[in-house]
Length: 241
Image: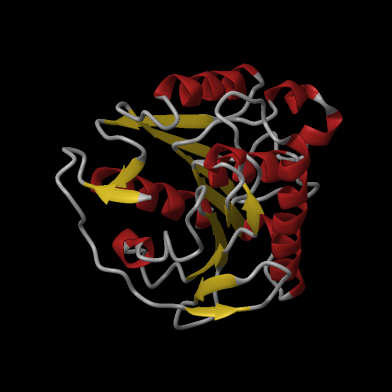
């Protein structure tokens, strides 16, 4: 993940360091507020990155002290990726530029993220205060997990990504989170996952009756400061409801 301003001029924050803890089968980086958390954000990184990738975004969100949020950044397992010649990298599912979606791999990762959600519920956080966020491949996983999760969740933040299984949205399995808030953001100059792919997923969600917001920015496959400000305002609105 790259962070730029929306004119593509370079980094705007420094990395902070969090501890790696094992609270589930997935190792995670966790950032906790000073007091008891009011909500939890589980943030899923993109292909080839790890849980530290979005760790620096937390201070940039500038969430108010009145909204203490716990952030959980899991590391994807290391798996062979076809697009990288079979090399093992951190990935939520296999990826081949000329192939279809690795449905089996995606389902395995959905189960792992569902375990993370259950871990937070077991620790006292209501499901409706747990939000899934994801970038690129992590966004595919965030959408797939939350849209079909059996309990209402707080929201979905889908960055530079697309919908993995839009055909299943009309099934009874997708009705629990029919009203879930969704924010989708994409770069107009994204050559990794072209914006048209994200926009078609947004339109599929709209057609299925979901309340989804769309934002696009003059950037590539990355995140920009203007976008972070929008995300912060959206999180505050969604998590304080």
